[in-house]
Image (cartoon, rainbow over the protein chains, first blue to last red):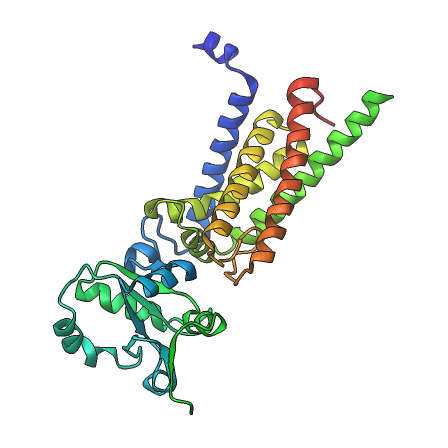
Length: 160
Length: 148
């Protein structure tokens, strides 16, 4: 045993020591600081949200193999939205459950939820809602409406 | 004379890399949840490992920083820092290729939007760090110049 330890290259021994120091200091801090942190759960697993890149969303739109959902309020949706997108506003989404379920009974349908701005979380709320309804392939297009406009992609505008 | 110069350059590289790792670790250790969100956005680490990574990675960075500066467990510190820098660089390139404009999370745990130009800057910066770490690895492992 002692001989084996002697034969082990230095960098392996050093690496093991560093990892042990890291783990023990981390656990000590966790224990004494009283930090609220779960090692198991992540927000990702909680709501099964998936971020989709703009390029991927564009190809879904072009190939018409997914449904776009605008999670902004009705007022903004009516002004302008991605061509073909339906509106489920984050402020009263529960009203839409029945209609949505009957209109889209296929739970494996690819859904892309978007709102506007990097910090807009209404698409996350709608993603959570759709996951709860049983839809499996729900994706979030972060900053979706702005990116869509910037790229001059087809949208519906009322002109107001 | 040459050995003196090498000793000084190795010392400088160690301190520099140590400061870099300390800055990176200290900025993230305070709020592991925010950092977890950044790691999650990368979509590289499996879901069940996101929080573990977010919690321990900053401690690893700080430990490496201390080891690099103090010269203790130097061989291990150099190897781990090189592996970390290469994997960070790989993740950044992967993200740039996928067109995800997510935060780098390199020296902060705040998730901000990053443009392609930002990503090129992050990658260039990482390459400089890798260069420093590789130089240190060469000197530590092959020339056996180490502490002080």
